[in-house]
Image (cartoon, rainbow, N blue to C red; front, side, top):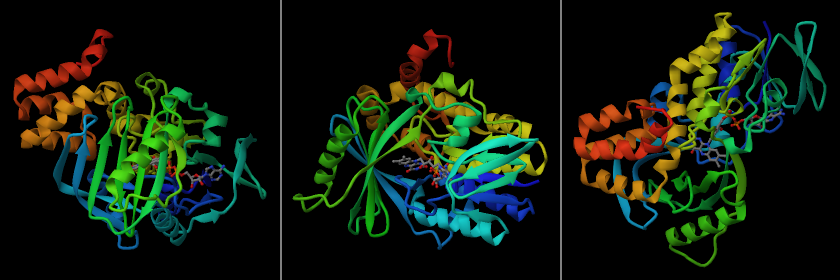
Length: 387
Ligand SMILES: Cc1cc2nc3c(=O)[nH]c(=O)nc-3n(C[C@H](O)[C@H](O)[C@H](O)COP(=O)(O)OP(=O)(O)OC[C@H]3O[C@@H](n4cnc5c(N)ncnc54)[C@H](O)[C@@H]3O)c2cc1C
């Protein structure tokens, strides 16, 4: 069995290594990788626990032990983290995974895939430089996936977020900052890396134009920097899948000799827009399904593992980003250690959404917990959704 993997980002390169390690021949296509993909580079503590290779010294990263949250009203709260998260260079993470795949016997093809065609039960992968045959094709080609577009369907614009990101040079303290703003279903992040910080902002596509997001971002950066005159950074925009709840119920992730992983599959937390963990996890599950010769199991494995969580995150998003909720939620988190733990685990230790109500009731004051739960789910329960 020969597998063609289109895209050598985290999902594709990790999948390629896992398959090659077990002797499954695969071709890994990418015309850009390894490169610094516009990304926060935040890797949650859950991802670090499940994928210990992330601790490798070969991947440049900062360990973050403190986080500052700023509410839409301007209140700020500093929280220590009981388990740190990492901020990684995306180029080095990608390079590390590609090297591992090559060492295990995968073949890297630095070409841009233009389309895939099925001929007599096999795939022809047509690139800008030639064509290659394979038995199975995997779309790991990110949010603009051509494999997804050809074999399943394009993302609806309502299932995408727009992010603007830049890199600020300097040796910054190991404290991440997350700033929530009124009218933005998203947040500004400041994630220090080695010798610079990645700074960005994301919101649902169509809610704001990229130049409006850039203005908000520049204003935030000016407030953070000691020297206020100029910001020496160029900003790039990028898209992130962030599916609506109803979309999670009708997605396909595999079909007749094809499958999708990572962003190409839309596997990003629509509330926080964390995608690295889901890219790695979907690659791991797909490798397992392919190696067992049970590709049809892949969709069910995703369902069992985390699709319920992503669906729940999509349901909670609107309410979560309301200024009222953020003000109250962060004030409670500052006042109560138990609430703080739940809030931080919600953001950094997923999956936790589906157990949120139970944990709020068990740990927090039941009255406040009930109010928070009622607030988060009120409009959804009218539609007969979660309990
Ligand atoms: C601004 C921004 C900030 C983010 N911040 C975070 C964060 O802090 N933490 C987090 O967990 N997630 C974050 N995410 C999400 C995260 O970046 C993605 O979910 C993750 O990179 C998905 O990995 P992937 O391998 O599926 O796709 P990608 O990393 O996008 O890789 C896709 C690869 O496919 C290649 N490719 C595309 N088309 C072709 C083609 N036709 N032929 C060959 N190769 C092709 C590309 O060159 C690329 O290397 C952020 C996203 C954005 C946009």
